[in-house]
Length: 236
Image (cartoon, rainbow, N blue to C red; front, side, top):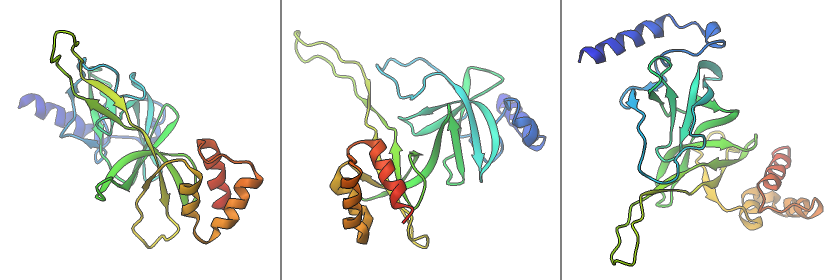
């Protein structure tokens, strides 16, 4: 209990004395109030027996937390694609981390890659929240959802089989978010990169965009071509 009170006291002092100018130049020892999730904070970093990794970058690298378009926190961070969390290294202990709150007004840049929170339609039609990386700007956005699943261990059923340890399996996917109607509640929808699925999102301009694809020799199975397609579409 005393240890928890001590940590909370340090956090409170740091939150009130935080200087946004100095934060641009040095790592903050404790996350800003209203950013960090203390329910899962200060968890010890322990080695795992699972094969593979749930991290896009296993090492903690330079990152910036952006709240309402303003940099509010700088530190060492990494993205856990299994837990769908951004982890911030405790700059004092060096052997524990805090989890960033999932809020629409909080974005984070890790190693030059920007992560934003969006709602999306899951396979069971429920609405969920996740981190995505924006691949283009405009009303019709292509989003990338990095995701790692944990495949459970499998014990041998015969003497001829081998034990299979728990393994992280990557299951990343693409989503489209149509924000044309700013008054509506917009959710990202999972898509495969195919000509039909991408064109279906262009509504009344479908035939026009089909001609654009042909004239510019675009292959909508390729991420870079879909980005070029959407960048043009968003100018119309």
